[in-house]
Amino acid sequence: MKTEIVIIENLKCHGCANTIRRELSRIGEVISVEVDVDSSSVKIDYAGKNKMRETFVEKLRKLGYPEEGTGNMNRKIKSYVSCAIGRIK
View 1 (cartoon, rainbow, N blue to C red):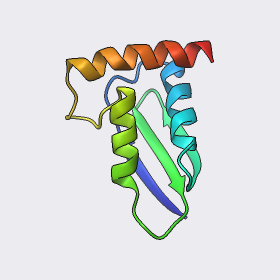
View 2: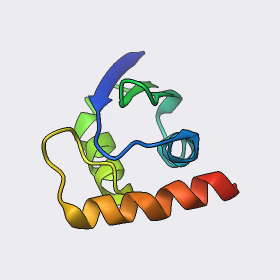
View 3: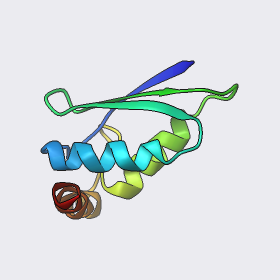
């Protein structure tokens, strides 16, 4: 098992965390996803031979939660939509 920890931007609440957990868990080799709202960190445990950090970072970026220091206004707006969806589900 391998682990990646990604510090992200725009993480505001547990609705955001729910969206992140759900979407990252859909990636085939992911075993578990832990989201810490207070530290804006995402810990992903996964199986496989290859490093998957870029896959995770790209998925988070598309959801509106870019890796710390790489965000822009469009990503911030997208994160609000992801947040709302996470609160509903």
